Image (cartoon, rainbow, N blue to C red; front, side):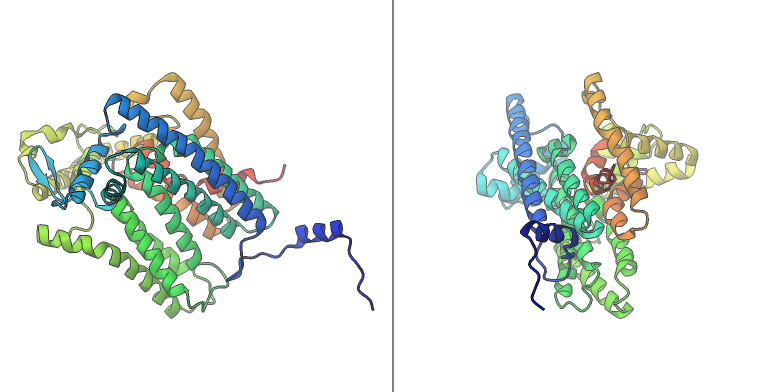
Length: 438
């Protein structure tokens, strides 16, 4: 029987409605995804480029490095790295050898080695990295939600939101570790997604992918040490989320490689700390101060480090100070558990505040604009969680970072600054809620 010719338009229509999912191993990304991804990554870079130029101009006009004092510490450590000096910060004339983990200072040192003392260069590189994270979010949504009609709409919405959300744009221009943390979190989540992707059992490349995913998690911890406890959470989730076609033994092997990659990145820092302190220091010796900042008799939920001016604390060496403040914080919790719970509630409110908490940003106009942006996002995140309630894989990858950091800051001080960096994956939830047909 001769073949019946299909008109071109009809053929195109059939292709549009019956295109199979191309998530199989080795398949190329569909043309619609490539075009949309490039479009929104470019848009994201252009608006972040403008923000980087504006913030750098503002800082130079005022003779400062950036908006926050943390930048001075990072910049100082980067200078010592460039000068091949010991990794140390003097605080009140007391040397601190592990005040900050080296991830972000190494990034700044690399920028200074390549581009000199310009503060614009790292801002521009951060703008590029954060723009690429928009593409990573789109890939994450596409891989977890699917390529059906709603999945396509959700992918495009994710690109729009992540590219244009004002707080994310502003964060990328600041010389703070959060600016590098965002793309690393997105890259790490994409690595976890790959390890749990259906249909990849027996793929020989998964071993390298497991190590690579662990390497990314390790780098993320070196940039933001608060990410450390996400690693065991990810391991437990991997064990449960890997498809049933993989035996328990195979899952354990992949998780072991995942942990190996993580350890390979952190091992040099651990070894260096063991030489300096004669004990195991996993991240930094600033946890005691951070913990006491959030848990002490005068705590308000906001950061107030004036207790470091106390002569009794100032005279202590780095390790003694960290140990003393940590012990004092836990003693406060034991002695005043009700107040500690009240502080946790206050910090929760500060973390999820729809407007900035800091006094320098507390203007009516700023509060209104911030609320107009944040409150709808919160509502759509909740709608996205409900809509994806049967898709545990998507829920973990999009919501777990935000929930994890939110819970962490029930103990440490609360601020929307800590929320902004980890709400980017949750834009996938917002996108899914918006993708629902009217």
